[in-house]
Image 1 (cartoon, rainbow, N blue to C red):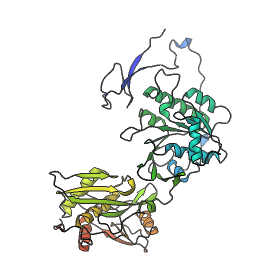
Image 2: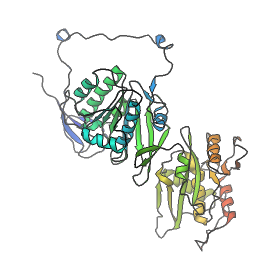
Image 3: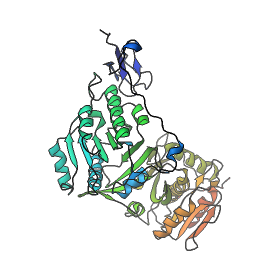
Image 4: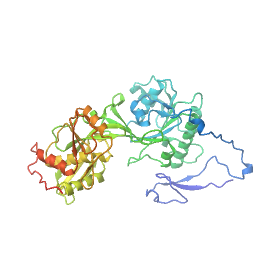
Length: 474
């Protein structure tokens, strides 16, 4: 009888140890190491006593050239979801979808499965957290109860694979969630690193052999990362994150990894009483409740993949009584804000060291591109001076450490989106003229030009008696 090998596995990062430890040396997590019994269907012994294995077939690469230059895709029926996946679900692909509890992951997948089932495709929804009756209640609330979606409440991977293999392979199979699945080949509790990895591997093998697109729903940790071993993210073909604040009514589907499409696309949805509704024009949604006369607000013309997006940047600069002024940022990189503040102090002639600075991206959107530097700087100077920026103007451009405003990519798409929403002017870096003549543009070379333009307008609202003192820029 073979000796049972006991290992200790970290439930956060998947690191393996030969004895228990209080702290994982790989991820520095405390009390995350759990004892697990390694097992599997593998057989030991001499090669002569092992059963003969079937040899795999080898296919020539040149034989696949004339068949299809692009992997066949199955549209989901939801345009925003197809945008993120790259045009639809690729046959045999596996997608890992993560998001906060209650953000709407199950609602989105239920609507996608119903839309695909309405086209005649076989779709299976496997729930490991809810009963079939609970899933039907959600479908009835969304008005999707009459769609031919196959439902099941099961957590055993072998039973799921055997059931899905009967008859025609489904075009889409949804597993909600991967943390509740378990396989008989591993002697561990459901939710452990070994079970999650082995269950995901079995489902991936089923997807590759049958051509079924599989979506695995994953839980997230407190810091927003998908729970479980990171090796699962490397095993799947795509990783998507469903983001949003429960205090706001819109949700953003963002691709983190995609082997068959772009990784910088986003899909915008609005949470309504009837489920998630697509938002074809998210710029109008983010700018719907904008206060045109408020100081400290600037409209940023950004890009999310190939989609132009206009969003409002809000800044509040107030005198601080603390020895170290506070810097609070929501929706942007705090390090980037520190750099913009330093450039304004060094090259813009503005003293911000004695002020608290609060920055917010309206609507809960998260911005990562450096093209938002110019809009952030404009909002900061506007809040400090009390002068409201022109409501029909958009801003975009990258600020260097020397104070120079550097050009950014896809300027024509940004200007076209601004013109479509009724904006009349754009402050942008100096570069090639790509704007439509119907939209006036002003090119800026240095951050001092922006400060001088805002200071010349003067305070338009007397909300602050002690107007800031502007020094001569370097």
